[in-house]
Image (cartoon, rainbow, N blue to C red; front, side, top):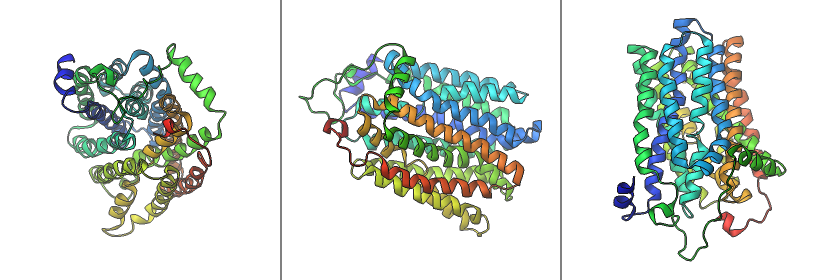
Length: 427
């Protein structure tokens, strides 16, 4: 670690290397979270499990992934980013590997729902917010956009490969590949992830040389820190606007499209590989869309950006049921339109959270907002599975998801409206 810091830290700002390492961590976590969508049909065929049963395990995973956010951010403040991330990646690797032995639904709920959901919740958006806050004063939106785009890149890298492995070798081979990918990231975190800029004798990127030192972060029990941030935040209207708008974001992305698109494509005669390739295509466009969103959030009003993002996403979801009936161009148009907007909402939401609650409190408060995102995703993952099981189609679920996004476009216009923000919080 010290050798790497001395070699690299003096040549350019180390914050960008931290972004690269955390990008790989989030990449591995994104690939892990995407795996159940590839396993849904093979598990249904091999064990006779219904999509509602498998969706329940996925919804538990998604919910815990979000609920871990504030506690993970507090643990990073108390114990450090590196040890917290190392422990989470180790649990992911071990838990995913053991899932190759599962034979009953409760085992999938325990391993993929509870263990993997909780562990990947550490390598989540709260990690990105913590790193960006610690290492950047300027270009925070761009750095957050790059890290957020790792989720899309995780789909790009993993889904077509995993779908092909499923078809040729079965779902057990898939979980072993994913476990190995998580294990490979461990040494990079151990060697190349210092805690703060002063550990490599640098300041935050863009910070003035005469800037006062950063305020000390809260110390103490991580549970107390996390709940303290929650109790002080829930009294503000902006917290609930951020929470419920991000609930809608999660319901319309990870929960619905991320979980059910491959199965939806199967309903229309497309193979798992074709469905996974469609998700990967969306991931390519989201890589650009989310990075661009970070750049835009450094320059334009975040409320207006979010209104456009939610509105356009809602229209694309309402269009989705019709896309399957349009030869050749139907699904590609959806993939481009929706892909550019997949998680472009994250950088402006982080920006607004920092504006409202301040840079020091923002990572933990944002962790609670991410919990809303994942609760929305869990709601949509399970709800869409139930609607598909009862109606035999995903059309109603698509319309509900699109309508929620249009509501979200109106909600975000009320966030931080008319308030005066201190310059050090808006920086």
